[in-house]
Image (cartoon, rainbow, N blue to C red; front, side, top):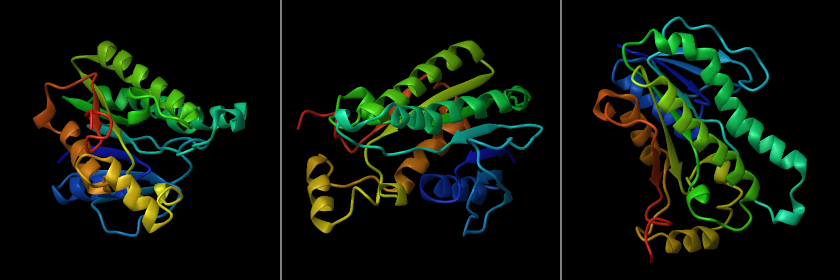
Length: 227
C-alpha cells in the first residue's frame, strides 16, 4: 500500500484519481475545502490549500495538485489581479505543496509528483493569456524540479484540452457549444475526468518509472494534429 496526497480531490479529475488509487488498496489523503461525496480509503483534510497550513504527513509516495482555474478573457479585459489570481491557484499553490511535502517525498523509495498544465501553453489560443502564462510557469517548474530531484523524485505534468468537469460548466453552457467543441477535436469527443485520472495514476505508479520531466499532452488530437 502506498501513501498519496491529492490536493483538490473532492470532485472532477481529483475525485477520479482518489477513487482509482483507493480501489487499488492505496491510502489517500484528500485535501479540499468541500467534503468528498464518495467513499475512499484514506483521510479528508478540510482546508484551503492556498491559504491554510498544509497537514503534516510523514511519508508520501505520490503528490497530485489538481487545483486550477479557467479564466478566459480578451487581453484588454484582463487585470493584474487576474494574472495574480491565476498564478496563485495554478503555480504558487503547486509550488507551496511541493515545498511542504518535499521532506516526506524524499522518504519514499520512488516518489512521483503530478501537476497540471494546459494545451494552451503548447499552442497559442486567444483569450488564454492569463491561464497560459500561469500554466507555462508550471511547466518550467516541472522540468526544473525533475532535473534537480532525479533519481529520487519523478515530476511530470498533464496538459489536457477542455475536460467535462464542474470547472468547465461555464464554457459548456449549452448543447450547441458542446457540439461545436466536440467537432473541433479529431477524436470527436471532449475529455472526461476518467480519461485524465487514468493518465495521472499511470504517472504515479511503477509503470511510468522511466518518465520524468515530461508534459503529457492529452487533447483528443486538438492541438497535436493538423486537422
